[in-house]
Image 1 (spheres, rainbow, N blue to C red):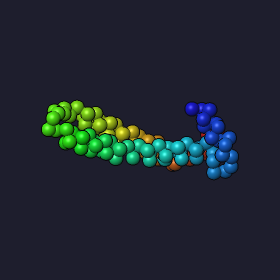
Image 2 (cartoon, rainbow, N blue to C red):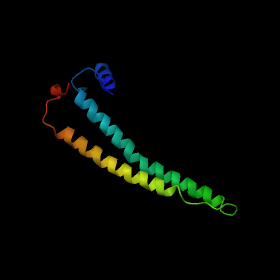
Image 3 (cartoon, helix red, strand yellow):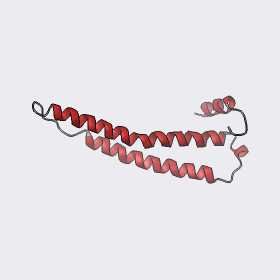
Image 4 (cartoon, rainbow, N blue to C red):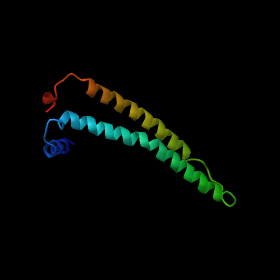
Length: 101
């Protein structure tokens, strides 16, 4: 992970691409992906419900997948909250970016 951050810093020289800014932009991107995940989970549940509806006449479907999706959704919300706190701390920090090098 350290090498990847160093590579990014070397690839993006300049004032706006400090290691601090790279970390912040990485967190923003990660939060975006975490926020998109619940919609993906809901779409997967809807697809499974649709398939179960088509197969209902000839197949008994045990609903053991949905609880896992719901647990994943809860964990994603907690993850988003933690990432948000981390991002706020980085944005509000008064530490000069040069000391993070």
